[in-house]
Length: 371
Image: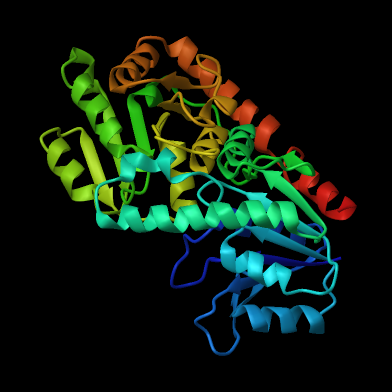
């Protein structure tokens, strides 16, 4: 079966971090024997540009070139990630009735008011305009299209949000979580001492990833005698990095690293640490959190959006409502070695059950074949 991934961005050598979770799927499809290629819609390109990333053929080109490509190739299914207005136009330009599966992630299907935490500049007003048009187009596309479409939502929360914010119903749909490669991010039993080593890997480009909340939790912990026995390592890049680094620079046991990480580097850090500090203001799943949990790190995160679907408080991690509760969760694990080891193991098992190969890729392939 020949599969074509249709999206708006994909990893390349000059930018390894664009939709890596889509690439993880593509590699698994290839391993399952599917001929899988990628088309990136880019109307700024006059001609089609092709590159190969990790043995995947990727094409970048306009809507018109996409249409020509589909007519010239034998394509059995089109798999869409992030249904944007340009993607809708590309799909509607086709006359061939190829089955289409659309994955719904977050920003393309939720209203601007859910991101008011980012409201600090004129750029947000531009985002409101884009978002209003996007959701209106999404509703029209879903309700008026004659295409053969199936939707896949990465969490129940985002399905509920999308139906509420777009004001539509997705009748032919499934909830299948993003794949976590539990073979790559494998579990090894933690040592009790690792509960004192706390890791954060987050972009500092958006307030969505709540690095300021992590910083506040660290400040609260600094007032406790146990603090001097803890180690914090915070990795990421973005416009808020320097501000938070200044706030935490007075603590010698808090190290900040202004860098992106490869999967291999992340894996090595997961093996060294025992707690994953990952509050968020909004998330439809939390892939990096799942990767850390798979390695046995205990997530200390926030009780909002889709996170409770993936973290069972006190069983596979700790949910919180404010920085004080984050600090209390870290201290709870500090004072209870047995609970730390138990929750660490349970976190890893939960990820395998929810987001391992059988629960995600195998289910996706069933949907693809039956579309």
